[in-house]
Length: 252
Ligand SMILES: O=C(CO)COP(=O)(O)O
Image (tube, rainbow, N blue to C red; front, top):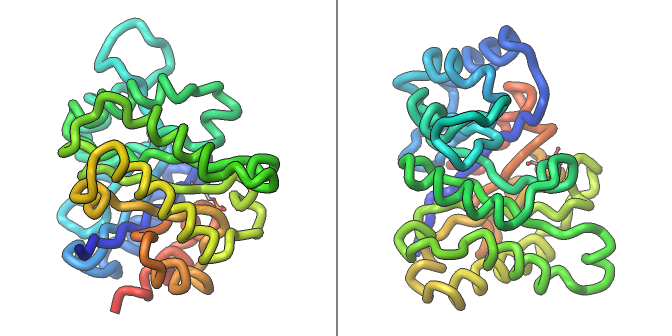
């Protein structure tokens, strides 16, 4: 089974609108065909409408970094998956460790978001990953299995086969200390085995799993050569056009 690679930048809370637009102008005509790789930028919600407009007709796809689980209503400050879908955005990152930590998101919240995102025709990028303490205690597999099982609760096999899961060890995020490709592959393998246990081997063969945590142009090839790693979710190295484009050089 060959899975199409997916490289996604997660800009987090960075850039102004002008900087975002300059980035789109610099990359949109220089990325590989979407027949070979899905190339995605996860931008702050404020920039998604203008970025969708200026990247229309190109191979650049967009992601939100979060959404609420209701489509409308009295939820001050939130963005609905329906409104995000309407912009022409295709992905929404959910359950990033920064949202779990600073905004107290639970697995139950994340599962509700996954369902709402799928119901609106978008693809969730569901994040999981352990703290340094859990890693050092040798409990990574158990932890990640728990997060994935809770995050996917009540989804159908078809829904799960189309989604993207990102394994991001918290100790490797923004630290420059990436997980070795062996560790990353092993834990992405745990994610795939969890999907297999819950949904069977056909779904597990189809679901795309990214590694994230200090991925850079210099180490992306190594991760992409691993059996269970289908892509990368990239923070720091996705912020500059040159470095973002260099992440895509593994596509020959
Ligand atoms: O959190 C990340 C992407 O979601 C990873 O960030 P860095 O690539 O900056 O380590």
